[in-house]
Image 1 (spheres, rainbow, N blue to C red):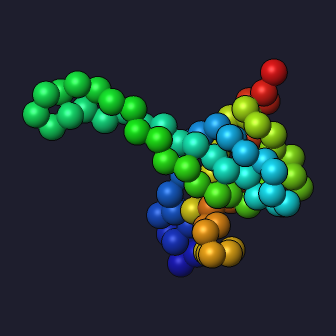
Image 2 (image 1 turned 90 degrees about the vertical axis):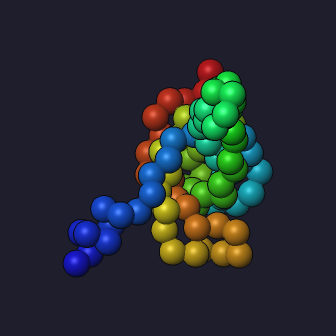
Amino acid sequence: MADTERARRKVREGRVVSDRMDKTVVVAVERRVAHPRYHRVATRTAKYKAHDEENACHIGDRVRIMETRPLSGQKCWRIIEILDRAQ
């Protein structure tokens, strides 16, 4: 049962935009959406607070995050892996 539950968790990729908190980073996830009538493509950005246990992420890193149980009032995502390091 745990495997099917874990398979349904949402996974997103984004960039770290803030790392000033302890064990928490803010990840901005961009998605491209077509307007329903005019078909112009727009970029939508959502920010998620994600748990970073080792404080390994820094601003500009590209990371993959996964949905998890609520860890605080606003934090319900965690870092799975760091895909790219910032220059």
